[in-house]
Length: 290
Image (cartoon, rainbow, N blue to C red; front, side, top):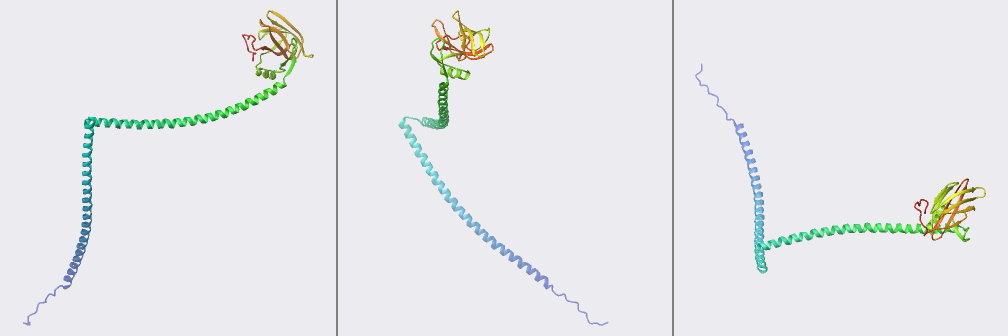
């Protein structure tokens, strides 16, 4: 065996791991520096805003102090004025406050009254407007009625002009007669006399106006008839009278002239009317009266 000593192997240093740790440290250091710079910048910004806010707050406090001083001064002046006024009027503070409340209540009442009057005025104006409208409508209606009345009067005059006059069997004077129901209505509208329509059957005594009538004969071919009139406990015969002939007779204590006109002659029946003066007595039953 050889006596030459064998050298032990020498370990080399781990250089790469040291360099890796150094780079990581530098990176962390850089991030810390950047964060510090950003923090300083943000702190500076916040400091500026805080300073501005403190300045505004100081200004507001100063304004509030001025307003408070002015208010205190005003209250002091108002108190002095109130006390002076109270001494001038001989009133205490409580009396002044009571008077002030009374004045306030009076003012509120006046305002409420003014609102009420305004509301009433509005309602009145609306009512007046409605009444004016109604009056205009009534005027229009009245105008229409006047027109209708004028037209009716004109038609009535025309109808009257067409009425026939006949000579009475007693007086011999001409008198207006109605030949049918429509013409009788025209005579009724004239209002000169009272009119009572009747229908007489042969052999039946019938009350008409204040007298009684009894048909004795009806001649259809010759349009003649005969009847008896019972008035004032007397019987008056009217013989062979013509159609539409005014048959006259006197009756009553004032000897009033009545007229009887027959418009229709049928077998055993006649139809017509009796005309009496306006001042003649009115029968108890006036179903046939105008």
